[in-house]
Image 1: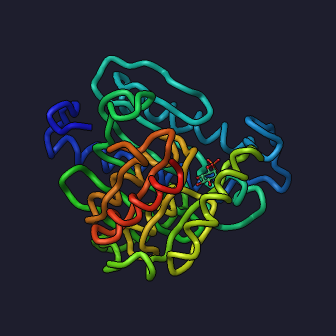
Image 2 (image 1 turned 180 degrees about the vertical axis):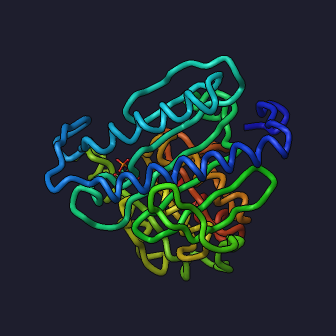
Image 3 (image 1 turned 60 degrees about the horizontal axis):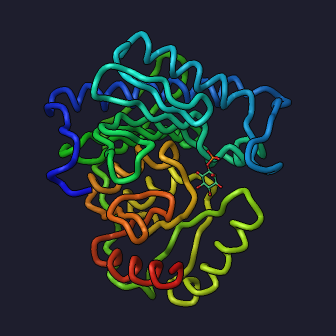
Length: 291
Ligand code: LIP
């Protein structure tokens, strides 16, 4: 989005309030998901038989919506499971109650709660941007958060009821990767077979020119890893605003670069997040092989 067209962001002190609330809600929801996981998860499916929603996805989003109705009654809410609930203010909360649902279903500890405050319309690619957000990783005892212009931070955190950060936060910085051939690239794949086939064809051309790929199963945690320098870049096509709204801000506030594919901002053609030195070459490669 052209900076001159970007919706205005709230004042810095309000951004910090939004960031603190996002962190508090992500941690509270993350604790519930981890503590209250039933032995047998009831599931339904969405776009395909492998695109599952568990009862905890739905219950967690309901919890987040209830807390936002108390704390921020004027704001809109846009969640993976419940869709858009209009508001009257300039902030929309974009929620992924469990990012990495399949990991959660299988008991793989790589899942997250993503809570972001955005300005603009998150349903309109190029016409919105995150201004505060948090990603909670309950199984790791971590929560990542950022506010526009105020850096990206990692907190060690207790996820016991009513608990929170247990130490001073660490500032997040991306890796120093500066060449594609030494880039460790995170990626992911969709739930539909035809989409996965095309994504695999793209990876056939990308895999030989990067160091290696990693497929963690949560876009939000992949973006946290770019912000923290645990991987050098991340690319995925077909993810949704709730998957990446908070992670987008974490990467840019840490000093990384985020774009779309063939577009300035992330959207239906994909999201590219990388170190500043890797991003141009990775974007050129992906725009060429996906053209
Ligand atoms: C997941 C994304 C991940 C993608 C998965 C899935 P969900 O979101 O975070 O990056 O590769 O296919 O879309 O469905 O767990 O919220």
